[in-house]
Image 1 (cartoon, rainbow, N blue to C red):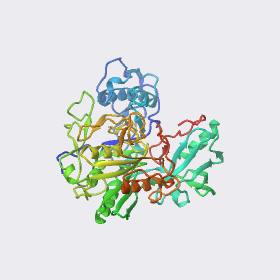
Image 2: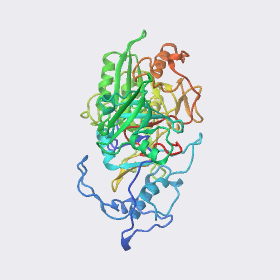
Image 3: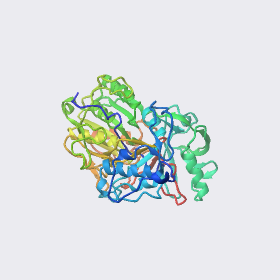
Image 4: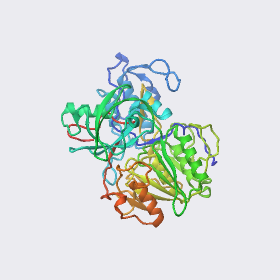
Length: 520
């Protein structure tokens, strides 16, 4: 395996996340010792670390580590955020220096990012978010969150709204209740999906994002065959299955491997290795990697996937990604304290869900078909970029990816885990400028990097993995002919959109999906 240390990589995350999640609550100062803000003067982050308005006691139920919280204040938490951002944020010199007095931590954190925009006009930093630490630990390490096991796609946030089932998790309460891909929401708890009152929208949001185990909501759903069904779903602690629909597809020119990959989390390591071992045993000649709903995760797992795909002659001693931190840290990782060595193409298991050191299967391919949408983000885009960097052809089927060549190390403080961009990634060829995403050629949005492939919308009328489902059918057709098909079976091809349908994931999502005006 190429030489590099793993220290810190099991923490390294590059993920789409969500930008509206709540951080710590507010609170008043702690008497006369309240730390003060001074414009332009930044103390070391450790000066304010773990000085909490509401200190935790005991140990984490997930990690078993004792909390180190001490009595503090919201002001101290905000000053820690300010110093932490100034120290390690990629664009620290573009952040306004605001007096934290009077801000809650969530409001203050929201201000601590660059206001710059990209070539397409979208925010340069769309990835600044936080979640409760207990939720983060459960989701990242065990793939668990409170949900029904269903992902909804908001096709139209404005009235007339359209919210459709994109995916159900195998064995989840949603799947067992009969919820299926393509079902459209008619109402939730008696409230029509097009209700514009504040109370009505509150009801819809509560149903879309349950917060407590045992919470029940009743959905009226219109199925693909136009039948209407009323289903009551009870939220539970649901573990996501990040690798699904693994199959070998027989074609006239050889077997093709297919899998849906939805999350670069701990459980995915073992599932991915099992899938690629199946592909290797079948001697597949190509792989269709379906990343349409994969918002990212751990970079080391993305590296493993890329290694298992590519010809070893291309990845041996090559750089999967080189992290570039801010100007204060040209040669050192500010989080781990280590030398900023490149991330290799990992060729063994790393201990996420398999014991460390096991040799990974390798398919030796020179090309990869990737199914993508605007929900394909971060670590998923790293697979695309890193393979292109060593000469593997990546053919893109679907629409433009989200555009996140950036990443972060999750950081807990006072019960909230913060995600703030700390590095940009570049591939073996030194390329990492895809802030407006990768897109199939011909209809790419402004600023996107064009790849060979076909532009088309997601097809909610067919099951994931069905060879007649539009994106998979198009990938297989392109593989056979080298051209994008024009048959209606490939679904309606639309003009490129600057924004994609919003996916309401069963993890990492905002508690506010709709507003009375129908906005996201």
